[in-house]
Amino acid sequence: MKESATKRPLIEIRGIHKKFGSKTVHKGIDLDVYEGEVLALMGGSGCGKSVLLRMIVGLEKPDRGTIHFNGHSIEKLSEEELVPVRKKIAYVFQYGALFDSFSVRENLAYPLREHTNFSEKEIEQKVLTTLDQLGLKGTENLYPSGLSGGMQRRVGVARSIIMNPEVVLYDEPTTGLDPFNTAQILKIILKLKQQGTTSVLVTHDMHAIFSVTDRVAFLKDGQILALGTAEEIKNSKVKEVSSFIHGEAY
Ligand SMILES: Nc1ncnc2c1ncn2[C@@H]1O[C@H](COP(=O)(O)OP(=O)(O)O)[C@@H](O)[C@H]1O
Ligand SMILES: [Mg+2]
Image (cartoon, rainbow, N blue to C red):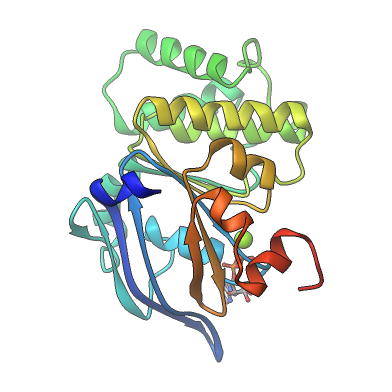
């Protein structure tokens, strides 16, 4: 997006290399994520999208290269030093990762109890308004096992955003979801964007890409092969990108 050029990169990814054993995943990834944008990461299965997302919250360490958040290097931080970073950058796990023995209310209250001095009344208020934003009103007393997969995913999103993070990272937030659940998740991504939140989402969902993203980065063979608006990526002349998008043999 042209206007992005004038915006400040909130996350700067430079020269990332990563191997698992003899398997090379990243071979020099450079990518900026601008403040307030929604950036999609696309690419074939196993190309390293999830690993890159996890690196941004320090769940994986690169072998080489740097990741800066707000001008501060994060790739070498210890678990303890990552605690404040993870309050600002939320990671939405692909399958929600809820606590099964906690009710929906307790799942959402957990980060607030751990990281804020909110009173019980403030916590309850925040839990209920966040559930409402995800179309989950009335589910607070249910347990994860009593929810559909789509609802579990939405509760996972609710729990991730309840601390008002600056950045939300979503790993395939709509994969496998029906249109109703997909729409609820896209709606919250857009709503957070209007409030200035930055989002990075790994997705194959072209509808999601067209409805919420500002830019799309396409990963292939350990590098960013193409970067542009959804429209630019859709019309890309790069063979691998167009075959992938148009569902041809890849
Ligand atoms: N912790 C790990 N240990 C070993 N290999 C891993 C690990 N995490 C990911 N990989 C491998 O790295 C590659 C990229 O994984 P991933 O980022 O999950 O791909 P995707 O683009 O599908 O999200 C895959 O080949 C995967 O098997
Ligand atoms: Mg993945």
